[in-house]
Image (tube, rainbow, N blue to C red):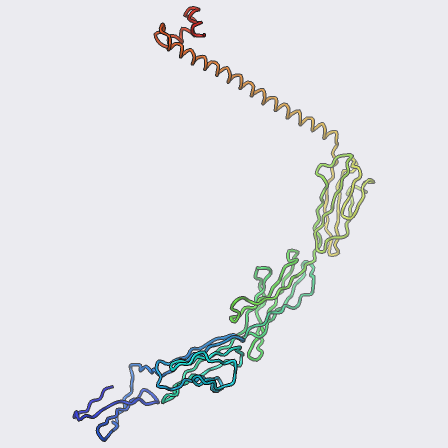
Length: 419
């Protein structure tokens, strides 16, 4: 703002800013006097940049972490910068430590910057910190520090032990110490499964979150790993989780495995009752649908042994396996083969194979004979052609060939061509 003396008598004019706002008072001075003009001007429509105004930034830090507070000014008139905490206790005044808290350290101190760090931050450190510069008037700036509560590792409760197939699994999971409230998720292996909405319970400045699942188990869930994972913005690397392996009890599924697919009369033979369940079946029962088991058969656990197979052993065999949770069963139709019939069938098969081979050999021989005769005739024709072309008596090769093949020339000519 420029003011001029109306009489040009060497009077200096300048404007002074008021501390309470953008008001300016015009002051005139000259040799031996000064006067204050009664007019005041309100500065509006444009911004006046204050180079002494401190500038700070808000910070967020997790419990146990370290936060750095930085205060800067564009210019300094040799006034000191100061940081004070939420209780307005001075932390640093320039390079001088004012509060005996060894967690707080000086990072940098220059005429235009004062930076400090607070290590091992806890929830009580949250709040507004003030940077001040002691100019006339004093200028201040606020920096809000937000402290994140780190959630504890989640805990799964409610697993009763092995569950029978078709039963209901109910598990709960909780994690405490988070701020703001954490998020809980459930997984079966790598697959996320739905859980009930989180329940948030405030505990002072932090929160405890809880969630639960409830679903019907099947045999495919046996040995599955159920995990509860807690997610939070303070966990920058990965979520925290807890796992629970579950056991599902189910009745056996049964099949009968024969020793051979071609049981022959007069041979030893066995059938095995294979049961898959949890737990494994320990009780097996064999029977034949048409009546009693053969006299020469013997049951040993899951096996049914036949000492000497006989046609009378033919029939439908039934196996039952029991593991205490339930029973499973399977059937097998035993058909004993006659070894004589097997040999006859084998002989017939060999005869058929031999006949096929003989036919193939005969066809190959016929092809060789035909091919040989064709080659002989072709070679003979080529020879006659060359002889005819080399003879002085024949007018051309074609005439010589015709005479040779038609027998129109004499015996001497034929000898000449065939020698």
